[in-house]
Length: 462
Image 1: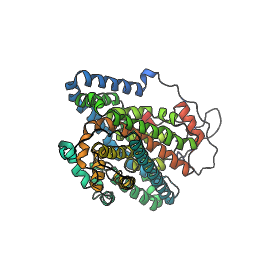
Image 2: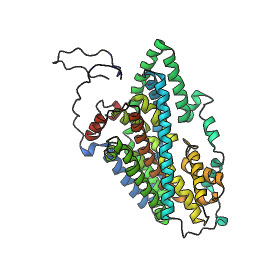
Image 3: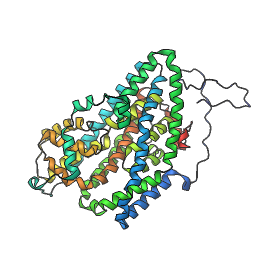
Image 4: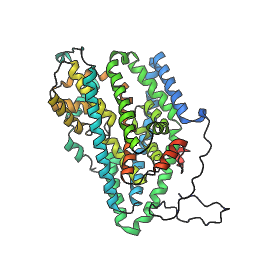
């Protein structure tokens, strides 16, 4: 929304609130950032404190920690309740505000190109790391003695039904209401894009609807603001449950694999994503600091979906066009899973090494091709990382699928890193697409990252 002119300037305020990109009017002066809150009033401080308290609670009183599971799951459910409406409203509002539908298609195509490039690099990096450090060497697990049981068996069963064709056909919902009720984000995106295109096609008739969509979006984001006040409580419950149920000792039994996964993911974020941002003259460390609250919430809840609405708001605050954010970020949650891709290649070859299953270079390249598909074939599904791994092992047949039992116990501790890396990858991809579109003001981005305050601070971040 355009800021009103200063009463002392004698200028007449612009009656139109539309932030048109094609406007030839000179840019408004940038106001100074409002005074920042004391550190003890910042959300990230309380979330970090809650995570530490959750770890101590789960470690010292495991039964209490396990009993706190509903606290974390209820918070995540409350966030997920708003994801579908926010995605729909943002996409429809973004498409309704663009000058040309051709631009929407161009943004979508460029997003997919960036997603595919990131996935390929992440998978290749995981393969390189696991072959260099060989964390599974010396385990000598007998595949004949491994038996699938419990949730792991169900994940393998679900993975056997995953395919690229199944993934594509599932994008089209049988019911628009069902897509919202089930929280299927890809189906919501599909319906929202069609709805937005139809609004543009009907011309002036759709203008009041777009205005109503934008106003409704403000209300939904205010609801999100209220829910986020409970983020420390949700992070505390989720972390206490994780440590209470699985125990810290689980981390030491497969420490080499966990350490390699975290190290590879850190390398990907700092070097690969950081290098891409350096080409735009943006510091990856400042971006990570800008998104610190989102990363801490993801760390506490093990769910990158829990910050999807806030991420969209933060990127819009950097100056990324609303239609780019609305299309790129939600789609990236299914197509741009960089952390899951690293995990997939690491875990697959680790199982082969642990079961003494030889894999030649051509076989590993074949695995890479399969993983490009399976890394996207389980987007939006509970246990997506394990389902994608099971789908990969079932597709190639050279690595025993029962080998996932070797890493099932530590998957919960690896899911945090997957979610954190996915979040970083989607943030960077959105900035790259915006720059590719020629719609990113680098000076504004760096100014916001330096001050930590968007020029137009959204209501849900106040």
